[in-house]
Image (tube, rainbow, N blue to C red):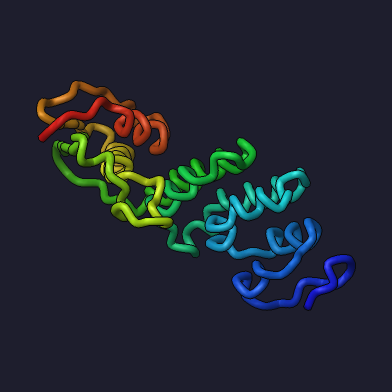
Length: 197
């Protein structure tokens, strides 16, 4: 067992540490040494354990999340960043901003498609369902509409002339600015009124 007063954190996978009675100092150390993916996946854990009360650690984590080399090395997918952003609602604004910056970097792998591109996301009522389905105790906050909106916004980012035609039981008129952030455009699409199909 780790002496929560003075012992250093052992160099073991983070999953082995989370059930131990760790102090805030230990959690700060874990956060400072976490990999890019471990950082992304544990933002709420770090928040719960007071890691972001330390401004230098907050700065280090936000810089890690938005680091182009680390984002590329992690082969981060836009979906992973959207999930982190959607769930990390109580972290400092600097962390959420870093997730948006990382999203912009992650969309570099989205293809540029020659010619006129049209994206038709379904925004009907059924798209309000959780992307994982309804599972007792483990239903995600991410909805099908969030994923459809992310795909559309990512395509608009890489294909600035793309047209977006959301639909439910009718076509919904919406204008997206390709210079807005991917997250902003995705949220705009996800907030559209839903109907039947």
